[in-house]
Image (cartoon, rainbow, N blue to C red; front, side):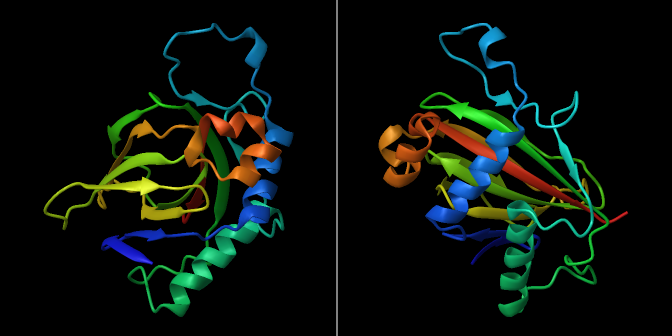
Length: 203
């Protein structure tokens, strides 16, 4: 675990090949994006998938046992085992859980640095496919942290205005950065990166 800021943690290699494949299949099974009707662009912008009914997110029920919920439980337990606590907040006791996904095309896919401004929430952000060149800057960090956000890694951070975790995608590495087995199973991942966001709500 790499502690980037007081409420921002990077878990390297959290997801093995089978877990990554299961989560990506979960996303594909629920993807309602009309890909064939979208305009073709020379340098396509990141695309937020339509996962819900007329909305980009899936709202999961408390007690859901999907591969996504299982990932959240496992990651939270890793933080606990490493004696990482988020103040008085128990990350196991979330009151809502939603899932969204954004597709980035290699090599020019990017997302400007931003703060989520979603109070009373934490984000568990997974990377699948090609490696993202990612940036994080928290209030206690002297400089921005640039790092390789590889397939199977997970970033956990407080998404509130108060926490002020600035984050963004600067670019996507080429298709050689996608794990071979994953790219063979899902051809789209050979030249794309998917950011899968789980938002835990506590209000």
